[in-house]
Length: 225
Image 1 (cartoon, rainbow, N blue to C red):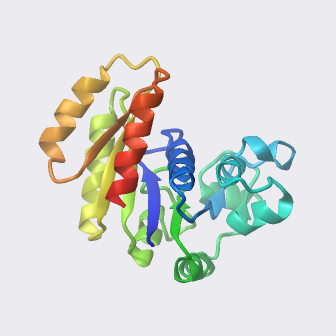
Image 2: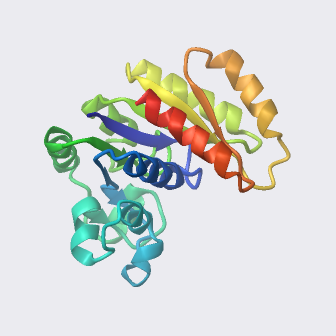
């Protein structure tokens, strides 16, 4: 039984894809698993099934209904902006202490594996004083970092790893989710990262449909947890 925080080097990198894939893998293996996406922006109730929260609920085989959305994502905002900006637009700021208490209670009550999906990248602001990194550091649970293979990802990835290391957070794995149409070959990205992140397990998720490769990646990730 464990709790894992899934974060990324930025927005749209693939946190939800990784979380949902891991959920399905664990459920197929007969494991008890739950997931939270406490903070969500760009949320449209009319398209809840396509939201990150809806994708996680579907992977959990839970109904995508308002009560379930509220259970896993109590802080939801309409604007597709950083949480601090989206919250200011609605004059409904995130109470950082309440967010921590919500997360800690979920960790304490877990009956199996609990995945907490963050929002955006490691340093995305939650309010005027706190970032996602502060949230992770306060919880102090192991982290899975999701990165891409786009041009510029190397700097973003190594910067994220450095920030996590400085807060003494344990990175269970670095998952590189191949970026569509990237001019940088996935293999080259992995080769470079292997020199700078040799102590961290590196996993790849190829963009082209490859069920065997995907299964192997999630099997390795599940084992690392």
